[in-house]
Length: 399
Image 1 (tube, helix red, strand yellow):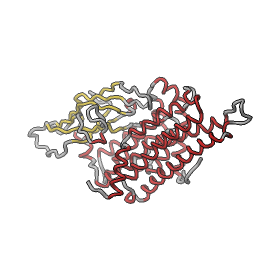
Image 2 (cartoon, rainbow, N blue to C red):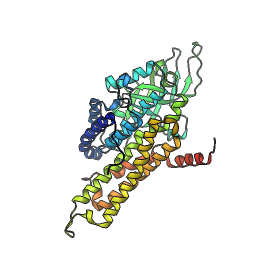
Image 3 (cartoon, rainbow, N blue to C red):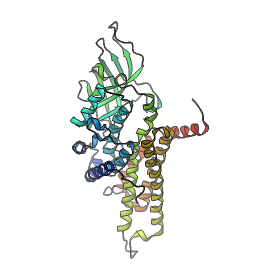
Image 4 (tube, rainbow, N blue to C red):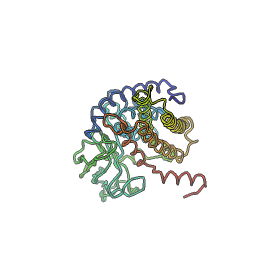
């Protein structure tokens, strides 16, 4: 099933072609990597070589300068090959895109970051989750601490969980509580109690602990990172060098889309696998394929109906944002995430019901889609937060 006139632009055509080629390669590796719980480093080398990691880097720095719609389209295609890889890449693309929203004019730190992506193929991820705080979207104060030194540099100590893509990352954007140990060094007083700091993965004191033992997204490498008195320079205090503008804060919710697109991709892959199965399966009780059976046709129709709804809202809102960001609201992006992830779970379930007991076979990808798709329910904003946002907007309730 095709829907909406995408790809439209030359950029979209090139990006979707690139994503399709990569997805086909990754799909050939996905079953073995999933079964072994192996982190597919070779996928990330392919992404680097293809220039995929540059999607959200501005053109003036050598990137694609891709729009929200460009990235959403591309990510949902990549996820059809390997959702674990697409998930890790989404967080990199989001990290760069959110910095782009806040940069206004020449910026030394941002230039450094873009150079690392374009020239070195570096991947970034914002790491904020901790055992004591749970999801950072709930507002818990980080136990990981950044302590300012008399020379303006920083020392960071703590632990972060769920660091997706851990072994492929070149840099972490670390959420920290801030303490000042500068004493009477004459530095400008600190106003913030928490902030984000750029930490190279190669820095002394950084250690990855293999803690990812998950039923779904087994290849995402979402391990624990230990930061043991890691020393970074003064320029690495991201919030001071690239302070988030009010406009950037308003647009933050839009850039959840590259991650949400992963689950739309899983849903599409599950639907396609089920349709292919129905067209080929010919039991000896029928003189034609099971695609002729009414209850099979009903399941296919329900899958396509859910995909139609998801794509209309998801891509339509992305296009609206690209054309007129001020016309979109955070609750709309939260609602889109709610629809896409819940419909994706429904679509995968329908695909497995259509295929029957064979859907549990490790020789077919449906059982992997079934496990992977459920991870979408646990990305912020959570369903309860989304419903609250929608209700508050409708009732015009102010904080």
